[in-house]
Length: 121
Figure (tube, rainbow, N blue to C red):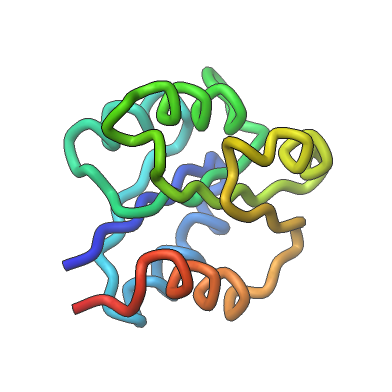
């Protein structure tokens, strides 16, 4: 089963994304900040990561940098969702496969996930 990781300190946003992805057939793992996300990433090895930008402990930019610095995950697609910081993320296109502004349309996120990792098996 294809695993997707959602990293967001806003539980409502994480729930909406997780439920939508699970409805499509993906396995979803979650973390509430980038530091916890690194632990979950090591344990579950997701095929794709969706992260927020503004989070406590470690923000989305730091989190994506940490993942991309590892040879085994340098090519992992990371989707960033951000309210105020999307422009900063777009300036770091080498880290993010796609950037969405909040509020976002769940259907667009799902379509983007499918385009990167395919439909779940």
